[in-house]
Image (cartoon, rainbow, N blue to C red):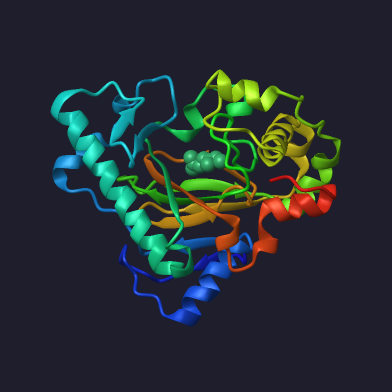
Amino acid sequence: MTERLYTVAATEWSPGCTAPDAAQATLALENGRVLYLPRLAFRLPINERRFLSPRFSDGKTKNISYDPSSGGLRHTATAGADRTALARMMARYADAAHALVTGLCPTYARDLAWGLTSYRPVDATGRQTSPRKDDTRLHIDAFASRPVRGQRILRVFCNINPDGVPRVWNLGEPFEAMAARYATTVPAQLPGSAWLLEKLHVTKGRRSAYDHLMLSLHDRAKLDDDYQRSSSAVRIEFPSNSTWIVFTDLVMHAALAGQYLLEQTFYLPTANMMDETLAPLRKLENLCHRPLA
Ligand code: SIN
Ligand code: FE
């Protein structure tokens, strides 16, 4: 298809990957390619297909989220047996995604940390949001409440649409090009602000200079109408019953259309990469000539 994708033919969530293949796939990811698994589907047993409906969302947020470390489920109005079964479905996806990443990228296995699992039963085009929250605009991922302090954000997506509707994305220009456009004019964090945000529980942990810069890049790109209109982008359709893995802190992306998506977030220490110089942290430090961690 396009050189933006690195296709892997796996049909199992626990692929046995041999060393040279694993290193090649891992490096492709680190270089900003999307690991694309067109033949890897996440099948729902009959009794879980009832969850393929937007009514399970609470109507306020775009996704239902599950925390694999606590078992907590949020942003759904569901109660009782449905709630338990929905959490079980998402837990199964979390485990599958973990097995997939550690199978394809064994060097990540030791320090891969769990983030949230998300289920998006609402049509991607139908969300009314502010430009800053609008994921149909090109952006890198950076979380306002969850500082990463340089850790990578690695996400596993699976289109579980039952009617053959693809998930449509745009992939934007390379990270360096976007960063060169905005990074050097971002003002430093106000002294004491990171401390205050943590104290007020706005952030979970201390927001670093890196987090501040990444959030600013996220916002600037999304709020720049000219950029959204005119920067180069490649349109990709991920068919239903396909899976893809992306470093979303590196790859400019926008979700244009689709419904029924599962997603698992992982955090990876920069030091665990095969080539640390490919991390946004290192790229931004080079650009700004100062340490940011
Ligand atoms: C995003 O990560 O920006 C959204 C991806 C999607 O919902 O397809
Ligand atoms: Fe995103």
